[in-house]
Image 1 (cartoon, rainbow, N blue to C red):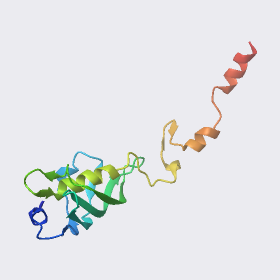
Image 2: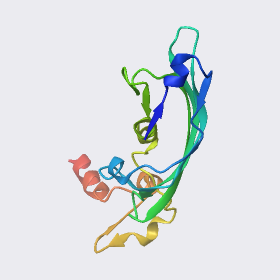
Image 3: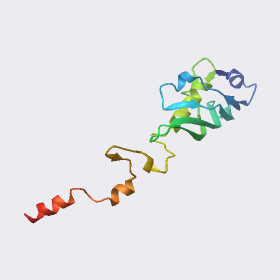
Length: 155
């Protein structure tokens, strides 16, 4: 979805509001860790500064559904982005257009965590001869080869 910036460049308006809810097409996040994305709430505007550069100031809020890093269950991950910058890269040159979907996606993808979990009880993740343990449990557990190492040190 393109936002026309020609009124801003002609001097007819001092700013163009971009406030509203936007639904990103699934093609943006189908190859990412995001399972689903709620409608994105944007509150902000585009204006032209003293140096005739287009600047954008906005707040982007939403919720992404991710797979839990441990349980692989779907979990909600709310995010909020404050953005205040010059629009050079996001604007289509010589067309006076801002592709709002591309702009939103470029800022949302930065908020996707590498690992995210809401699992607190690791005891239910176990199998035949293995169990998932926290780093604290691992740190305090004795080395199973410690008895062999004692005998080796004696020689």
